Length: 373
Image (cartoon, rainbow, N blue to C red):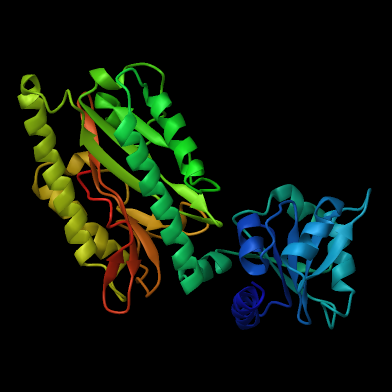
């Protein structure tokens, strides 16, 4: 901790200098944490031409000292505004050697009211909207980040296997969600990556189905589970679709054959896309491989979302595999690959794994959980 965050700040300062900015104000809590190690909220990071400091309040004064002792801090007192605190930082020669004329702000997360307050306090400063500068840095992971994501994935897999081994016939979708999320924490996760998606039968045709307390696992024929644990600040994201004991019974032969047909198509799309992942691959080309596979099988109208997205500190990190994504994959990016087919009135099948781009190809970080488990 410390040197790693400093290196990240230096990369952002290079971007700042290249774009003619005299300073940068970071407000997204995920980005503040990425650049400093601070895990609190309601705080801003000021990057001046002479140094950096956190603009925070008394709730976090001691936490900042504990989590990022190498970072300066200006603590807002009662009645003091954030824009007023920024003004203090600008005139502090530890952080700013001269009065800045152009300050970058995060366009995606800065509210209109916040920007109005900044402009009112610093009327002679130009606040320049910047788009995803830190998120682009976050897209390529270092070794510590890769290990943390692998750990989150492992916790996710262990928790999933726990509930598969003990699910009761009377369990509802919501019961399974509650138990799965408990198991992720019990297994060492700090939180969940996102609210778990669990859907029985025809409700699996909703890609982001919200679990209900209607229906019983024992009456269901198939289940879709999309889940992930968060550990040490990083996330996992997996999806599996499987037949229940009832779905495997002789009385459900027609249903089982349909499931197996759809599953095979989705798995082929999944595997072909992963084979294409390597440094320099165009994201939309990887998406097209999976999309064409599903379309050629006659189900193109039933796969509407992108093939995948980056994961890291958040479950939808920078980068995506979609029809319009022109970016190139780079070594040490981590992407989900999650093709699906969703048939209204019948159900849906999605298979999702987390994939690391390596020097010459890729590695499936979730490979110890078979796709048909």
